Length: 57
Image 1: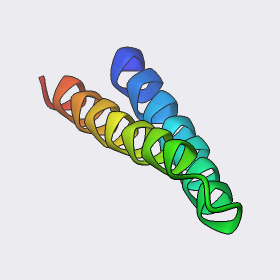
Image 2: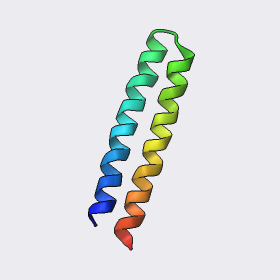
Image 3: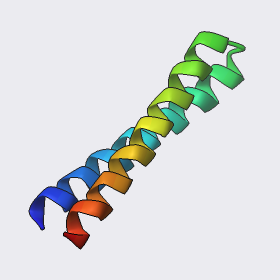
C-alpha cells in the first residue's frame, strides 16, 4: 500500500508544479514553459493513476 500512496503523492506534486509552470508561462507569454507545465501535469496524472492501481492490487 505504501507504494501506491508514494506514487499518488509524487503525482500530486508534479501536477501542482505543472500548473504553476503552465500559469507562469501563460502570464509571461512563454510557450516553452507552458508546454513544460502541461507535460508535468500529464506526468502527475499518470503517476496518480499508477498509485491507484497499486492500491487495488
